[in-house]
Image (tube, rainbow, N blue to C red; front, side, top):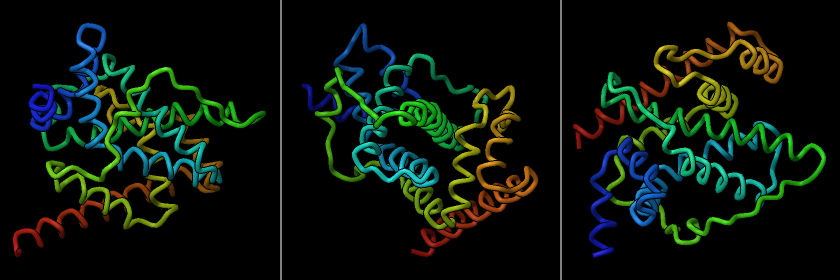
Length: 226
């Protein structure tokens, strides 16, 4: 019965997983299964954003990165009830919204990490043992080709351009009343960090997104040929 319930989550939409995770007080077993499925679908992307955050800040401690990655996932699980996706968002754009949500969680945890590491090494303790039961194998068979393609498209960018694009994603407002809006203070911080202008950053973002869309389009054409 437990195995059948676990397999049933493979057909649940990404946004529905947040709903089930949010019910962990009422039904912790179902919430844990939903989180396991979320982890299976998004662990690669989440880890790549965490890793890029570390690299872009010249941080290379492997143990800190692993702890940071786990903390981001646990924070998403804890805050699942606060996450909602506007019903007006087209289905084919919802995955991008979820990736933005993940990126913002990385940003928030990143600020905590940078503050804590100024005076001491990062120390994280876990009371939640859920991650110990999460499977370690790679992408599951049911994971969408689109997500794999998107990860490859991001990897095709130069390190600097990928860092800048993901920084925009980490800072952009995910409320669709102010879609794609980057707070001025965040943009100023990015200008200082990357030693460039706001206009240049926006151009880099525009070119990076164009390259990603071209990569995805080309992949779709190749699928049709095959």
